[in-house]
Amino acid sequence: MMRRRERPDLREPEIKADLFCDCETDIERADFFASGRAHDTGIVSEIIENEVARAFFARHALRMLREWIREIDWQQFITEYPEIAKEIDYLWK
Image (cartoon, rainbow, N blue to C red; front, side):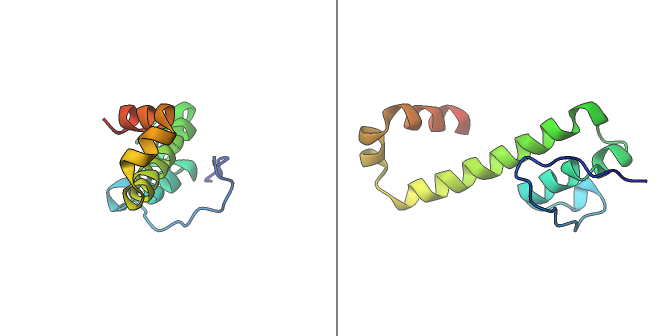
């Protein structure tokens, strides 16, 4: 019996993929791990399943942030928010 794990963003997962290789986006990968299917299929230990899901959610959030930043003037952003810009550059590398 599959147990549902607590998800970082508290929304219901959209279960689309039966296998990890079927996941196309970071959100689908995060859902796969957060739902407990990664452990059920033997991909990862149950102990780190939520942490891996959070990593995929964070990577998705970072990509969304980068897309938003591309829409604004990057030089202006660096001038107004230098610490955030430094963190974004560090995380993106």
